[in-house]
Structure formats: C-alpha cells, structure tokens
Image (cartoon, rainbow, N blue to C red; front, side):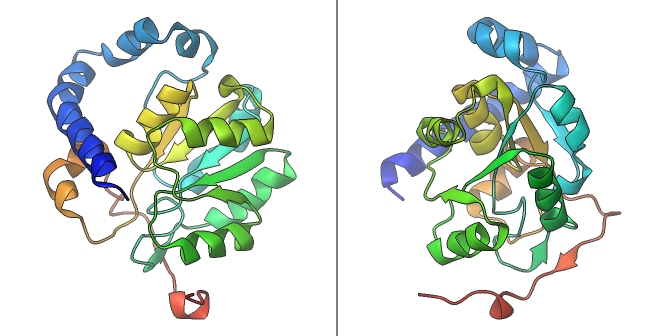
Length: 218
C-alpha cells in the first residue's frame, strides 16, 4: 500500500480523533452529514453509525424492508480476525441466508495478504475487490456497478469508521458498524482505536479459526 494512502488514512483518523467525540455527544453528526450530502440524507434508511455486535446480529428482514438489496462486506475483523485466530460467530450462515433471500453481496478488503481474500471470496462464493483502498469510493462504486444497484439500495458493513463507515458515506451508501473481532492492535489502533472501532463485547462468544486447515499460501 502506498505511503501516500497511509498518510491519508493517518490524517483522516487524526481528524476524526478531534471532531467525532464532540459531534457525537451533541448529536450533530447525522445532521452534519445530511447537510453535506443531501442525497444520503434523503435516501438512506440509516443516519450514520448504526451498530451491531456481530454480523449475525443484523436482521436481514429489516434490511429488505428498508429497501436494501445489496451488501458490501468488510473482511478483516468483521468476518475473520486479521490474525486468523477468530471467526465471527454464525457469519458464514448469515451470508448464506442473505444470498438465499436474494441479496447481492460483495467483499471489499484493504488486506495485504491476497491469498486470504481469495480464499474467502471462493469459500463464500462472493466477488471481492482487493486492495479496495477504502475509504476512497472507487471500489464501492465498482461493486455497486457490478451489482447494478444504486447507493441507497446498498448497505456497507464493517468494523472501522475511518474505512468502512466513512467510505460508505463518500459513496452515498448507508452503513452498519460491527464490533471488531479481537486482534493484535496496530500502532495507530493503540492511539485511535476507541474512536474508529468498537471493542468486541466481553460477553459474546468467539469461534476459533484454524488457518492451516484453510489457506494455501502462494
């Protein structure tokens, strides 16, 4: 990943570190988003940070009733932890159920290990873009073009505000943030993690994942 992109993400998280807590406390964030992006305000069934503990907690019937027909999924720390230690409980079954209900699904991943993205793309039978360079909207728009859906009909689901949620907003899509699966924190997560991610609930079960039984590195 380029140095310029990393610098952009760092600058963005620094900005969020300063403004998000203040705006959230005074309940201005949804209003501010609506003012900046009227299309998002008018068409999205969500305001901004609609949250769930895990992927399987998201009610698919509610998405369907809200006019959602496509789902863009993050991979790392949303479906599987980036160190491959944990799998989000019932995530695979949830994806299968979503497909049975007629949703179109897509994976967007910033992960550097392409073999992992290829594995999950094949295992879940979902098209994936990697590297997606979230939060830049190009990959989101490409996914929507493939699904042949408008932004208001596509929900983005991921664990990070600065890549998944912010990227969804830039693309005009609603978003749902899930808690981050436990993983070794990167340096910037130690500084800003509490602002860009939600810790995994201590009272929720975790499923172990054995990468040696699944991946074949290339």
